[in-house]
Image 1 (cartoon, helix red, strand yellow):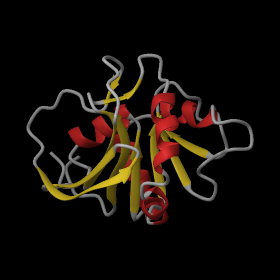
Image 2 (cartoon, rainbow, N blue to C red):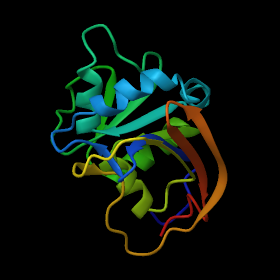
Image 3 (cartoon, helix red, strand yellow):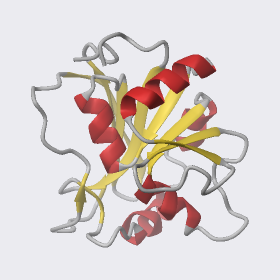
Image 4 (cartoon, rainbow, N blue to C red):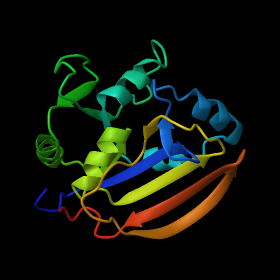
Length: 185
């Protein structure tokens, strides 16, 4: 990205203590089962300030697995960043093939606040300098292997600590502002 987009991008995600967002097969039962004990953890307040959700294909497929009739994003604009998902796969989502096209479309749409969800999407947004804020909720579990939240970076991404809370059930939630977030690289 070469210029600052007119919207903010926030991440709100759970990880294991060793930094995994899912098991190698994509399973997140270890997180959802523990999360039920801790409650909302601020998600409803967070999502109330979001007008667009951007996720990757795997995260989209996970949302579909919640069961028929249980689409968690009713009334929200949902964009899926994927080279493999069919453009007309689901009338509830808009499929974008690349990050530049997605950012252009969100800008043209008048998007104000984006929730970036899913490991690959978060990594892409971080590498492009698009993330403004990270809220990471750490679950009290070690998985040993799986899908990592963070991947390789070309340069350090400086963070400013905003807050840390202990919502319950052993979870620790930390929010950071990304220095120069949304500035692009």
